Length: 409
Image (cartoon, rainbow, N blue to C red; front, top):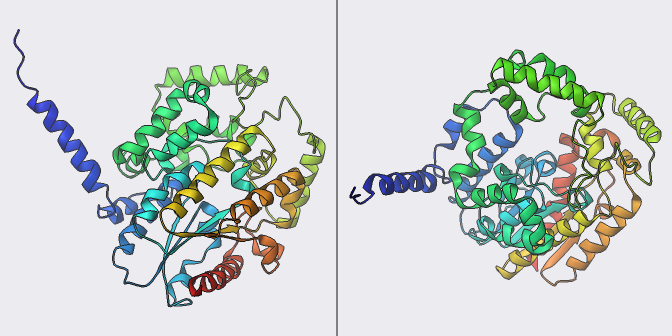
């Protein structure tokens, strides 16, 4: 049978690419998309970043300062101060949402350099450089440079072993429609913001144990489970219960070199489980609320492991790329709650500072260490790593002060 030219197929590809490049550009209908979200932290942050990039297109000729980082920037850098003319000689662009890791920072470089900033402020600390490696496509800003640097830092064996994750991250770098699919799903697909939509067995069996009873965690798991047929969901929970009884809920394999440590099978050398639990209870009492276990677990994962080498390499490549693109970089070592130090090895902090100081040896890179900042009181934190409004105003003021100095040079 003679086949004709695949006109329909090519037209479909053209339409998909047109949607990808136009509808999901910063000029796309992001206000409308954002209005349909149900408060999902990462997805809401992604939409806010797209709107920020659109706002930046109306900036005048004053020097542009980009401030970038994770939810710690969202909580710790007060946008009101940036917009209130506290530093009138500059325009400010804040790009921040949960899930921004050193790998995601590396994906941001093309987006940032396209705006020709005079200065880029990166809020980084041992929370970023010494945490297990995570590949989160939906947090990406696009581009393939980060994938290349990831494989270079980890080696080809990692790319093969985690080929599905690496492929997904690569697709996120190429296609905006893939990168923002979680935003589109949350805005237009089935949404699970109503607690009554959860399977009660999931909430009872999983979240109190592994996610601190906080329903915002692992929303994708919840959605996926609710899409299963009842019989499939029953089979899942039967298997889960059997795994829990056998203490194999996350599998029996040892963690890989870039995965989070399996503390259920290998205790931290610097903190035994009883001390960990005691410290949790003491700090919960001090903060006056029950902190989700994940926040403590994040701190406990900080280690002088091989993943720290990879994370530091990704931060270094981010800084190198920005400097090579013609901008200066200010690294801000964000403050943490004084009680946080009880949950990880002090050597981690020393290793991060040595790394950051080495980066700052470049003439185009400056470092603002947390020890240089005015002391933050315990009550100025919402949790162990995020500042409250008062703390944010104090940190933002310190950043603006250093930015003013750098712009005058």
